[in-house]
Image (cartoon, rainbow, N blue to C red; front, top):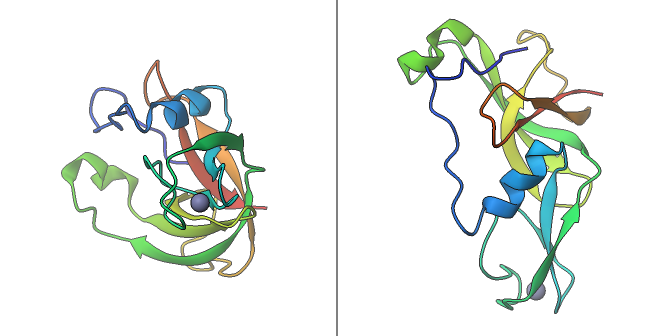
Length: 139
Ligand SMILES: [Zn+2]
C-alpha cells in the first residue's frame, strides 16, 4: 500500500469547513454531512446542503463500505512527489450512504481492477500527527 512519506509529499490542509472531517480521520471515522432539513448525505464538506441549500447539518459516520464506480491507473505521476508510488490507482468510490468520493485504491492489481466491485476504507496514519488519509481496498 502506498504510504505517505511525511515531509516529502503535500498533505491535506484542513479549513474550518473541512476540519471535522479530518478530525474524524484521525479516529479512523469516515464522516459525512447529513442535512437536517432534507436528510441528504453529502461529501465533500460544505457550508450548506447541495440538495436544498439548508445550512443546518450533522456529521454522521459512514460505514466505510462502497463500490468502485470508476478508476484510472496513474503510471506517470503529475507531481514528482509521487513518482516513486507509480503505478497507483485513483478511484471514484460510491459510498454505501450515497456520496461519491475520490481516493486511492490500494492493495489492488492495476491490471485487474474490480470496477463495480465492493470496496472498504483503510487508513494511512503516516500523513501527519493531525489526520489520517482514507484509501479504499477491494472488500
Ligand atoms: Zn438538504
